[in-house]
Length: 485
Image (cartoon, rainbow, N blue to C red; front, side, top):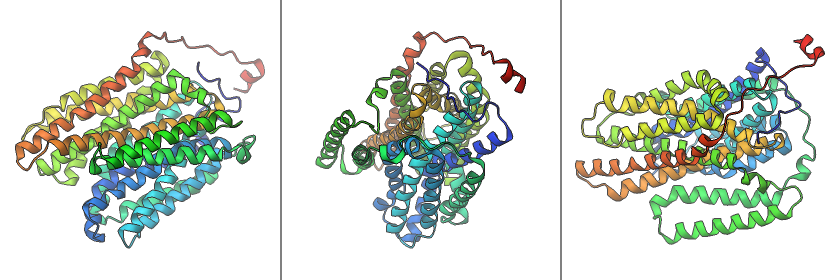
């Protein structure tokens, strides 16, 4: 059942103040979303400048992913219990400090530590921003429009990171860290003025489930760490299998803690919501498939075809451009007409078609005939699915759990890439060789992984076709409210 509309919604129309607050939240999400792909382009320059080995260099990305994915659930619940505005502003400053330290890092150790801190900051800001929207905008067209703009920003940042990173790296790789720090500081200052204060949540810090928080955060950090390290140490290695067993035991311990405490970090009944489960599976599928394709196509274009990082960035830019243009124009109207889950299903189907097109790259595949149509379809998929996925998560829980729902779906947005990237990397490494034909063979097999991920997402959302879409509900206002406009 959809959550009841919040009784204390601040905005019932898109006023200038509403747009101002939304701009701050979009700026924070944009920084979170573009981080991994933007930093990836700068890795060779970072390695040369700081004399970091190839095996260590990956931790510039991995450190952020571990911090982000590991702390998202904690960040989501912290927003609900400690105050969403407070958590967002504090986490923005953590992001700014981490990015600034990374940009000034004298060696790899400091840089990797700064990346982990930056990821933790993003883990708290993303669900806080999401829950501010779902609790500040009245349910219906206004909230859907705000979420469409918000998530379009995230999709655009994720897709355009390579282009922005390439431009900044050409100046100096340190700008890849310093520029986000400057933008984050501007968002923090604007947030102080534009994000309205809200009543402090009842209970607050005294209701915080510390044992549950420590257990689930340790579990998530271990899971993400294991996924990103598995291709290097081996999926069947004692280290990988042992880590997964420990994670499973920690998860069982977390479940036992949540059943016992009066104020659990995660109400386990939430996880029995089919709509929330479907939204999280689809979130893992959507982003996991895209990151797998981004990794594999980067290898194909740069290492196999000899394209530059800048050329590669511009090659994939149609994904971000389509997402930026269409997300705010088509997602909300289609959700109102067909229902959120059906729109997500359409987006994932578009992604399946795109990844099917990319299954057979050759030594001289045409960009215009093969890759451009696929990237346009991926952009359409993001436009239809990325924003509505967050709407689906919000609609499946009560108002007081909006931050946690945002944390859950954003956790899926992080676990999906970790899993998709690690599996695609493992498949490519196991099937490639020194000869050009062997390199191409490994890349082709790696491109099967995103296709499978996208198909699994479609299968998860198929039950939406059996659900009837409720007709729009006409709301009659009392005479006094109607007179006020």
